[in-house]
Every structure is written in structure tokens, then in C-alpha cells.
Length: 256
Ligand SMILES: C=C(O[C@@H]1C=C(C(=O)O)C=C[C@H]1O)C(=O)O
Image (cartoon, rainbow, N blue to C red; front, side, top):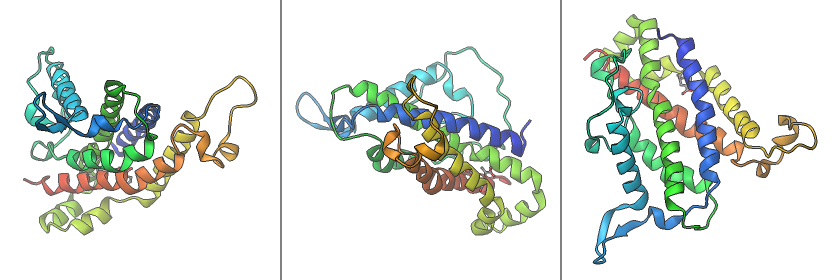
């Protein structure tokens, strides 16, 4: 069952996946043309970039394979995903049905392409657009899963203090809800841990010398495949605030 410990364990494990997916995308140059609008053979400007088409088609395949039968997974192009051909599985849902579809995928999409990607990838174009787009998809999927997991966090917190949450939800008091669900101490632990994971997972491993410790490694952030301070800021300024936004939106539908 859900508890504050199990949801925090889930979020902790997702940190590993987030850091590794950022490290993978940082391996490739920016590959700018993959993000510009495509043109038809006749020269007409199309509405989508190569990366957007890649992600739409990938989601369609994964939808057929049943990925979105799990409520933990939410597609970026929900209106385009075909139904699943995969064997049915009876997913238990811990979520309140009227609030289960709350998500901030649109905000995650623009945050990733406008803010994060330019800080991850070096300028350059090696033409390997499908490989880079696949790395983008991995980043987007894990960021979406982690941030939209705020629905589960909110459900646990609601069950733990139904009376207080119910009155704040009825009053539609967003500010008081944010305050009640926030744990500053936990946020500080999370931010410092992901920064450390970026330093540990993103160092160059050689057979000579000792394994790097944070004390001697964090001094020079350019040693790392992804700058640990970028990951710290990503969590502090975007991942945690968006997770809390999901928590609040979920709670506002929790009594529907
Ligand atoms: C997820 C939680 O709720 C809030 C959001 C956090 C996060 O996104 O990491 C951390 C602490 C809380 O302010 C939690 O309490 O664990």
C-alpha cells in the first residue's frame, strides 16, 4: 500500500533514472535542426519539428504496447495514442478517479526544451537526430513520471490528515494547501542528494587512483558529464515546484 515512506522511496529511485537520462542526453550535441519546424517536400512549413514527430510516433508505439494502461505513465500527446494491444493487466489504482488524470506535461515539455536541454547539450550538430531525440524522450518520460507522481504523494498526505485537507480544499485555498503539503527539510535532502548523485554517476571512472569522493570532486564541476549544480537547480526550481503544483491540482479535485 501507499505510505509516505513508499512514495518517498519511489521518488528517490526515480532520481537515479533522471540523473542517468540527463547524462545520456549530454553525450550528444544540441543538434539544432532536429528542433526546428520541418518543411514538406514542396517547401511548406509544417507545424512540428523532427523531435516532436519522433516523440508522437514513439508514444503511439508504446501506447499499443500498453505503456499508458498504468496510471503512472502519462503521454505528452494523449489525443494521438491508440489503444493497447498488450495483454490486459489489472492495475490497482491508489488514485481518486476524478483527480487521477491531473498532470503538468505541457509545463514539463517547455521547461525541458527551453531551459534544460540548452544547459545539458553542447553546441554542435552531428546529424544523429534519432539518437538524440530518443535521449530526449527518455528524459521527458522520467521527468513526467516523477513530477506527476505528485498525485500519489497528495493522496497519501490527504489520507493522513483528511480533516484539515478537506476544509482547505473546500475553501479552494491553494496557498494554505501548498504550505500544508510542503516539507522544507525533505526538499533540502532531495536537492542535496540529487546533486551528489550527479557527481557520483557522472564522474569518469579510471583504474588509477582512488574512487573520487565528493570533497575532491565537487570542487570542479567541469569534471562531470552533467554539472551537479544544474541538477540541484533543476530540482529546486522546477522538479519540486512542479510536483507540488501537481499535488495541489490533485487535491483540488479530491472531493469532486
Ligand atoms: C514529495 C513530497 O512533497 C513535497 C515535494 C517534495 C519533492 O517534490 O521532492 C518534497 C517535499 C515536499 O515539500 C514529499 O513530502 O516527499
